[in-house]
Length: 259
Image 1 (tube, rainbow, N blue to C red):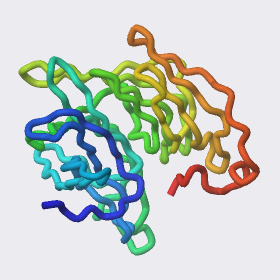
Image 2: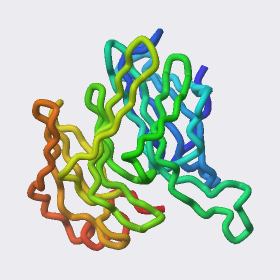
Image 3: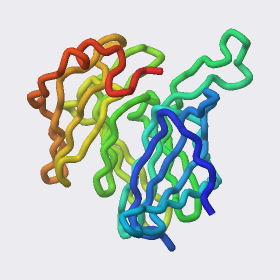
Image 4: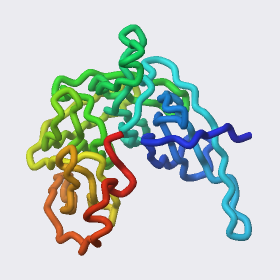
């Protein structure tokens, strides 16, 4: 009963605990580029069906969305927030092809930043709602996102319009009462300029940011530790590994580039 999952490039992924009829932890995959260089707007849900003799069996299903469906995109993020015993997916940012009405033969595959809308997605019913927050002026692609309880933190990202990587740090708070959700955004100080980086948790309250770019052709060789204490975020540099010459001179940084 699994659907076909194409080998997507630059999709947004996250883990989701719980849900109606779910088998523990699920994996959500949204968007990305297909092998034909087309963009996907599909959402897939992967779950572990069974574990026998160290063999893990997965089930993959396609989730239909209704409402304000996020357009096909890549280089974006999807996270899960938990509030008042409820959960919701949050989709933000990314890059998409220019609208079909503006396409010509020369500009057919021209990409543009997505609008800076925040989408709340109900994984159980497939409902999606878009929110416009005045603090978010750009649909920053290849940013770093961190989900903690009812809040998403957005760091860095790349603006195609201005070709800059601003030292952004936003917190997007989602309140989930029984009625309509409430979404708010706060601009925080102490952000970093980075795009296409890898985020790895080292504990519940600490994360490490590795790699990425600080300029178009300049890899980011420093690393950062992101820590939380009393719901306050702190970002500081950490001593990087002794990068090998192959890594230092490679044109591709951890398998990721600006596409």
